[in-house]
Length: 352
Image (cartoon, rainbow, N blue to C red; front, side, top):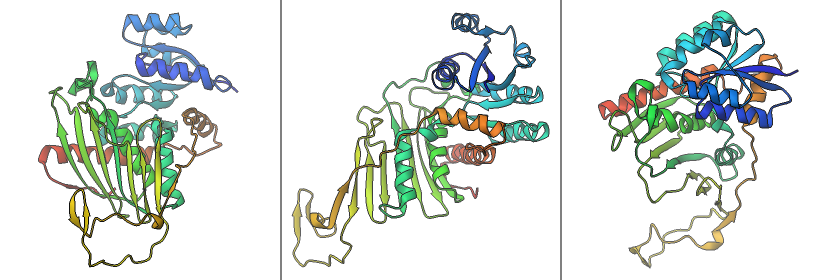
C-alpha cells in the first residue's frame, strides 16, 4: 500500500524530505503536495510536480493525506502539529520539535487525545559515524564507555536567516545540539544526573552560535558535546574512552580506529624515569606496544530511510516507533536544563 504525505514548509528540509521519499520510498510513500507561506516555494513545489495547497487548511482537509511532515521554522511547530493531529493526521515534526518541553507536552496531550501518531525526525540516529560508536558501546568490544566526546565543527561563523533569530528558535543548541544530545541519550538510557553548558554568541548575537556542554549520566558515563561555527582546525568527530581501549572517528568519512588493551597485567612502576618530548615522566610514559592491538572500526551501514519505514509500520500497527515521544520529551527536558546552565553559569541537576 502506498500512503500519501503532505509537507508543511518547502524550504531546504522540506524539499530534502520530498526528494528522499521519492528516491528511496516510492514503493510505500508518496508526497502528494505541500504548503509554504512563500510564493516562490509554492512555485518550486509546482515545478517539482506537486500540488501547492493555497493554505494549511486545504492540505489538512485533503482526505487522501495520512501523514504530515512539518518543516517550518521551529516556533511554528506546535500550532501546526496540534492542528494536524486534530485533523486526524499522523504527524512527523522536524527538530527541535518545540521551543521547550512545556510546548511539547501540549502536543503530546493532543496526540493522546486524538489517538494519532506523533514523532520527530531525529534522522541522525541513522548516521554512520554515530552507529559505529553505538556498536562499539553496545558490543563491549573495548569494555564499558565512561567518557565520550562528540563534536561538530565548522567555520562559516554567522548563522543565516531564521537560524540566527531567537524568536524562531535559532542557535546551535537547537540546531545541532538537539541531534548529538539525542544520539547519546538513545545510546545510554539511564537518567541524566547533571549538566553544565557554556553558551557563546560570538558572531550571532541573538542566539548561541557555539556551545560546549557536559552531560553526566547515572550509569557513570560522562559526555562532552561541542558545536563550533568558528573553528578552523577540527578535532575528531568522536573520541570514546572505554575501560579496555579507545576509539576515534576523525570525520564524517568515518575514518578512524580502535586501540584495544591486549594484555592487562600490571605494568608496575619502573624506578627509571622515562624521558619523552614532554620531559621526564613515569605516569605518561608510552605503554609497551605488545600490550595493545589496533582494530578497524565496525562496518555499519545504516540508511536514514528506515526512519520513514518505521513510521509507516508503526502507523499500521506492525512495529513500535523507534523515535518515541517519551524519548523526545526526555531530550527536550535536558535541553531546557542546558539553557538554564548557560544562563546561570552553574551545573544543573536533571534526573530524567
